[in-house]
Image (cartoon, rainbow, N blue to C red; front, side):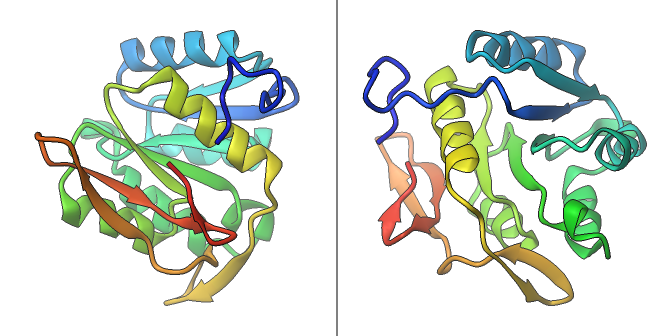
Length: 180
């Protein structure tokens, strides 16, 4: 497991270009603060579905942190579907981490089915965000076409209940080992 405090597993993220798509200015600032602390130098931001699409097409982020519910500004799941169906592979294979305040099983499975590389539940844990970004930046993602969209080519995600609160986490195996 990647540990940002362990020099043996630390992964530099300074070359990573990360886009944050969320209608909440507060969340964008919080995520920007975490990314800056991780050493990420290029942090792009969008508040709406339209701004996000323009950002992806013109600024080419490596990873997109995409909020599920963009309020009146759009729908993160619809944007993910649009990205995965895009004819330009630079766009359709963009690493996307869906971010949601809702940890219900249906939403998690829908995100994975639409092609999310990962799903994180708000409030974001800096450690989990770092681990996801480190994994995505250090492991080449393989994609396959399914239902007209390019999706990460991994075995089906496993939904795991953890703890007494029954919070649902989606783990997709990577080289046979679960991503935590």
